[in-house]
Length: 474
Picture (cartoon, helix red, strand yellow):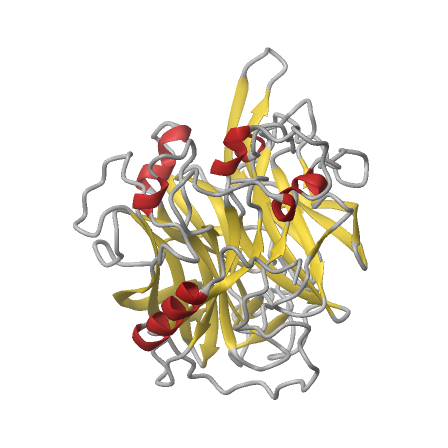
């Protein structure tokens, strides 16, 4: 019982879970045949793993976990929009896919004629398509103007589940009534359905006219905006990542949250801190309560409209406030839980670089352990601490991200707003290692769907990117 959060996961929590389950989303697609292996912990149970201060204190950049320096003369994908958080079109099994031979990615975008730092307040989800997974064409906004919820569209995920049906999940950021002040921090998880279309000239989408909120912070497991007001850093209830769990065939969603309760009300006890010297934890570390949340699809009508909030998979209480864009890969029978975080979101008394962090367990709800003992997988170099961010690990262990702010030789900076070089990881149980740097914005698919391939390669054109329908991409 020492590893369970007895002080938080109480009868009140369980009662709240039951209420949410009775009022809150779906499955519709055909289910994968479940693997009957016994989970280490019940997925709907109360066990939450912990990223302790002890583990985070072991962070030490070296050649295995530090990103290569990005030169200041990097190319850009689009002169029309800034690009940041990016995710590929996937199937429910988390594999990036091509549709009729076209690679498709989604990105947060903003007009490139506004200041880079203001992009978050006008963010829209745009999309790009490519014949080779390297050279991208901007297709415009995914959702029709005025259709999405909130004031701004923040990160999420997109899955092709049946035929040409695309299920888009995103963060509806801003007040329900449409007020768009930059101080408005409300965040909800939202969903819309559309259809993908493609021909020899490119990709486009139809639909996405109806949007619905599928989850909101409950105040018990996940902190609400009102509870967060006393804290020094914005709370989180965002970044839905939707997938089918291979062991039970059910559809779940990960998201970034904060532990429920009024900011500052938590205590940094041994469970949160691990083995640290007495008196070494600053008092205001209690305001830092990041977690990786979990929800389960419960609706049965193909609507993806009802979800049940479950207890967090991982808590970073007293360690870090933000566990952004959580996502998952299952590799050699192990569950690898990925997240990104900033240097400035670490609790007082700790340090870690902007970058990618990871944890490994034996099942979806597991006693996740930090990779490389500390959790650090890929951090920015000290000479360019803000150079790139928002890493996304694909099942082939390629990692894409966007270029943020790169120092220049004259002492200034160059803003990126474009995709960074893709990196390759090697995993060996509870350790990871950077092993290769690839091209800018290289996001290859793992299989093709949609039948006939469009476009056909021209005479003399390399064909390695083109595959028969529903066959793996090399």
